[in-house]
Image 1: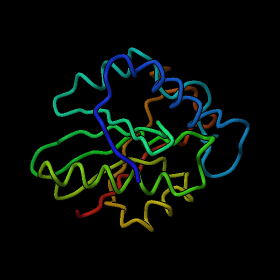
Image 2: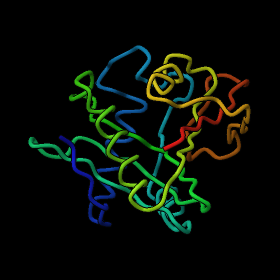
Image 3: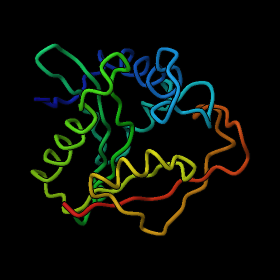
Image 4: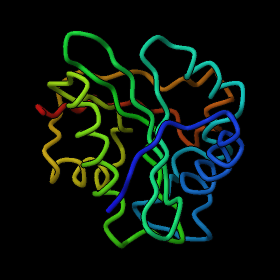
Length: 171
């Protein structure tokens, strides 16, 4: 069972390192869990600080009986809508159901704080990831967001047609 606690600033360096490792490097892994459409970093200290300065933003650390296993960022957007991002599982612990556990725990955490629906953005080219979220009740809204090509803090795209689809789930 995964427990969520709010991250402290002392957790940020490890969160940044784990996020970059899980999203970009994944210990040499390939496949649907590793982001190959964008190279380089996923996040850095300035981007994390900027993200967490947003009203309603919270960064949660996930731990199980063996210790820290990942983290997730949530943003209260008001009106019952919450936004989920940066769901991260330690690559050494993937394929054991921890992603599902963290997702369920963060949905419960947000629900306890008034959430009635959860939203997120996924690169539209990541069909396997979209399908994974779809099996957990997330559906495309029809909305798309552009990829931030001009901001190198998000990494270096490997192609020029990237965009995000918005997914949503009623809680």
